[in-house]
Image (tube, rainbow over all chains, first blue to last red; front, side, top):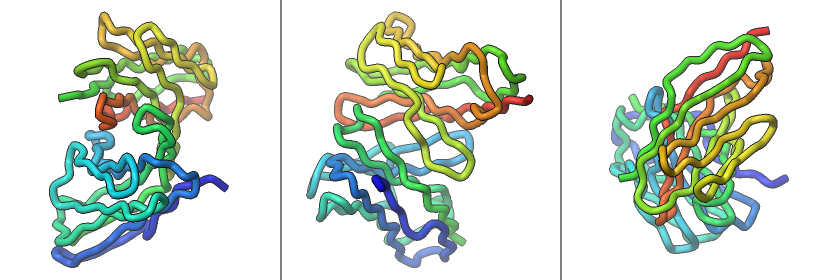
Length: 113
Length: 111
């Protein structure tokens, strides 16, 4: 089944404790992206990647890191999480950049205490 | 920079009513425009898209026309169903593959 998977689905952590949210897609898509969803703000793009070893900042990259060492994986790293990073995070992938249909993962709900 | 502004919700309609959700955008160049839908507890799904001026995207009875002169991409459906209850997001894709989403509009359809 073609899908985007994220892990974990739910995470409660404390300020300053490094964490990684994984994202994997099995559709051989070149484009992958991370978003955060907050009430009243919609989705905001954090980082995106057009291909392996190519990443670019989105609208709200501060406090986040990403890497794209393999085509299928695009982990999101929070090296020192803060409470303002409490949010719902979505990973997405597309076969033809952001112009194409993006397939979204199920989301990761992160709470930073 | 690029941005999307969409009609605030929530919107509550009776079954078979006509739906319009307004969306306007600001962008440099010629963006692609999208409507995505999010059902409770799920990620977003593409509903429809349009990639150039005057294009009409359509799917599942929903339609939206890319209007460059008014920088708009309003979503319409002639007769909504209870199963259409969801959150709808207008979005644009810029020239460098960045994405901007609107704040989302929650639609509730009552029987």
